Image 1: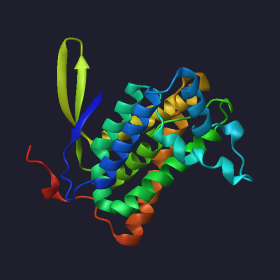
Image 2 (image 1 turned 135 degrees about the vertical axis):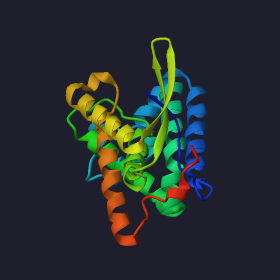
Image 3 (image 1 turned 180 degrees about the vertical axis):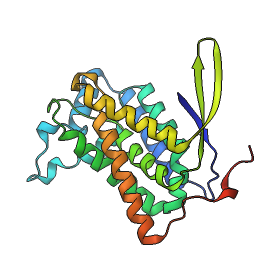
Image 4 (image 1 turned 60 degrees about the vertical axis):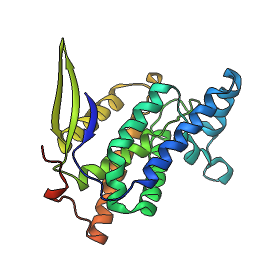
Length: 226
């Protein structure tokens, strides 16, 4: 399944969403300009390497933030940014740009820490925005339960575009990440537990914000008329 778009209007321009997409893209262009040796050095310096992290040394904390702006391939970048493009604007609309930026960054840090301590190879660096984006998906799951995700589903020679309720689409996504996290090893190269932890963190934090601010979760007139 590949998401095409959701059916929720954003009532304000998603400044932070677009800015984060731009920053991630520019960083990746910088990565592509490096030699293989320099790129490896960059990833080990600014990616999240559990063996290099120490609670007692604040100088080792920086990769908790920087790792989420690095990507390993065009596919890695585009798949993350496309997902963020679809779901990020609505969550930013609900939280406000300033709170959304803080939510995104803290979600990425929390996801990185969960991945770091899940018991994989401590010498393998973790990079990518997927943990932070998973936190955004967790918030979306709560805030827009009746939204639908227009989803591309190829089946044999048929091509289907199906409107899937967001709770089903994101619920299936989370279960698939959980299954992969339980059954896969660190050799898979995918930070499953960052996705799982980010989603749960985002969901819980969205609940806290909703309880404190009374954030509305759905309006009928926010849907496109189809």
